Image (cartoon, rainbow, N blue to C red; front, side, top):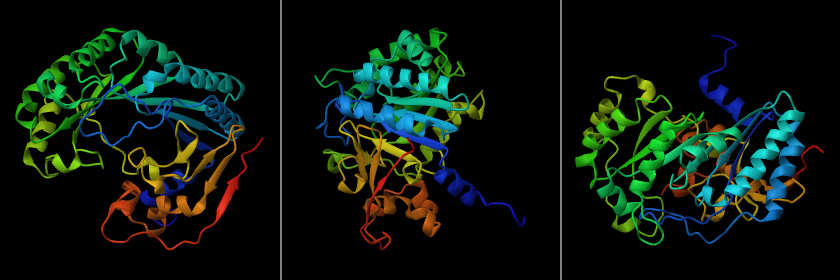
Length: 345
């Protein structure tokens, strides 16, 4: 109808709203795992005190003009720097007391090794209530690919933690990202029945079935991956939903956070980026967070991440990193200009 916004235009408007801010924070870029398909190099350690101050000061500068703040914790493994998570989260809660209209949400991507019921309850009190935890099938298969840094398996500890969360009253939601490979898919049906009947009976748990794909890691050339149209995947989706509701299955958003102008990745050293997959790509460094909370943005680096909105290309709003990895040139023509964005005092 005339005057109504299309779904695309609604998403565009949401991505540039100045009253909404998502900060994807890497409190450490170290990890206690060495997953065989990982693309990270672990070259950076814990978030420095200057960057922690910068994050808190940025929140303070923006808070009065925000209706919604989302903190997303990533790594490395974020729970290795839990004190930083607690420090910044506590600061946000104090800010929320001052800014009564501010809505605050927080989530975490974690390997789950240090996240049991008591830990989830504690972090929930600080506002961290949504988690993504990955499993690579039953223990025999999971422990071939999701290894500790010392080479030992991780499945039993993670599974025990998930049961601990299920037994706790923690006000959380856990999305189980279950990775599928040519190796583990023959046993995945039996494993998913166990997951369904053990964890999905609790509405705080959902499942996201995800193919392992090549993301630029050291072992990419040796990896075998499933095709996206493999019929076994659809059968497993049906199995998870069997006897329950579609709410058991996580549906990813159509628009990637990296395509949103109001989403920023803050690395442990204060560099600003857009994408958690492209950490080693120079194109992903779009600026710097300063200790006083100001941010410097290089518009020439930023604009390609937002080009899907200009071209109205849903593939590029769904994954803007496609433009950097596609064999066909897709980047917009831009001129170099550096800008310093001053946030309100």
